[in-house]
Image (cartoon, rainbow, N blue to C red):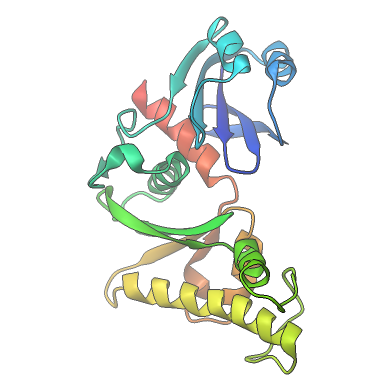
Length: 246
């Protein structure tokens, strides 16, 4: 028997099938529908499913799924494996909470700083005892480029430049690139430094669509040995939540 995990984000929906803690299949969709659900149910013996969504309201496919397997909705009340001290747990993004659960499940008894590079960049820290107090949200990589174009009259719309490796720009395009990409780099280093303790080990877990890019930004930093890349951290966290709940 297997678990079906569905994560509905801002820009795409991720679906995964787990056999206990092993992810045996995963798919990404712009929009999920009943056909996608039907295909998975025919291929695997799904015992239970969990749905996490940043959007409000049930989906048509969700009603179909509930007619065939036990379906759980992921929220702060569902989580059993961490101590959530967030002052307004009902407003905490499901993706952030799932990432925290996943980090603590993968690396227990260790402090973990989760950096999720997606539409926004989020920073969330869970200590070795499973205590989560909160985190930070800032604009993501593409959002920063788009904002500079949208809120000015002359700055062009640019995309990330993976080849850029300078501390400054010498024309408008490279000045924008430097501001965005070096700005994120300095932000990453600043947040990591603020959570670091000289006498205590801490994992830095990179996840989200920009995790590889962030890893490149940090590759020459003093924090590089502590970096772990977990692109499927949210999915693993959702699976850990359903396993611990049982």
